Length: 396
View 1 (cartoon, rainbow, N blue to C red):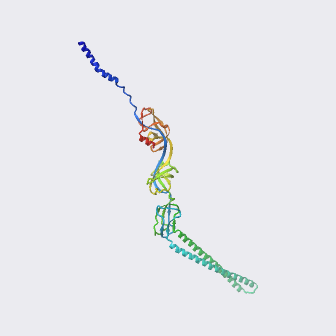
View 2: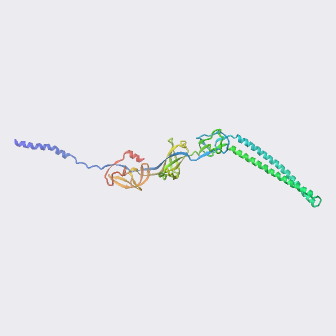
View 3: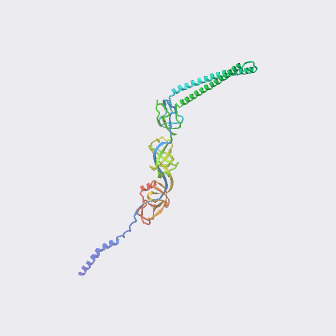
């Protein structure tokens, strides 16, 4: 009996320890720690466009001021208003010509009087010429008779005096003709001046264009010193007068395409017409003018925004955040087989949040999205593709 009790006492601890031993045998070996996760982006090959954004004011490319060429006439008719399109030679306003017509009639009368004076002076010349010829003939006969002693010296002297007087009357008559002709020329010049003044009573457009302003008012008396009556945008052309920072000024050139968005939201395509050769030393801004085609949505004085395409290329593109730039040098961190490696790269066009990679990264390679993080060459990481939002931003 005692032997059985001893055997039971030995079996009980063994039975109690068996489950614990089985549990220890079934427990798995502890897994090795995973490398840290790191967000990466894929180097995609696509088109990238470099742009410069400008803001400024719409203004006429060339303004023409139209005023009166005569003084003292009253405006009696206005034929155009602001916003009207006009052609060269169109009448913009008419001035009253009643006073000019009176002066013109007076000039015509003076011309007729001068012509009558010329006719009368001509008749006097003919009469004086005849008398001078007769006096000259009589003088020759008297000289011949005097030489023969037939007539005395007193008669010869009389004939000489008569001939001299006749020649003087002829010269005076001819001067009368010249004076009458001068009077006629003066009257004709005055008539031409008045006719020109009358023709200037119609104020005409000197060029095709758009009427921007009308200062003229009915009944007002015009003056050549009173300034312009109409302001016209030549050929109705409007341009964007914008300012750009000196750093972006070098990327702009004449002829580049620009898309201008007006205040009403409409887009108009234009071209860079002028890039200022100087920069304002106070604001560090340069002026750029963009020529635009005629469009009803473009109003002078309005604000507008322009986007100028400076360069376009197709290549490998990465976000700017993936590139570490140190002066002229640049690098990225490429992740291959879970290992980080830093590579030097050559940069191309930069546009927005993206930059073109000319050399150093191939299409499809994974690159650390935020360069300069805590990882170094040779570090092992777990690459995690960037969120769709980041990828979409890079794709833009």
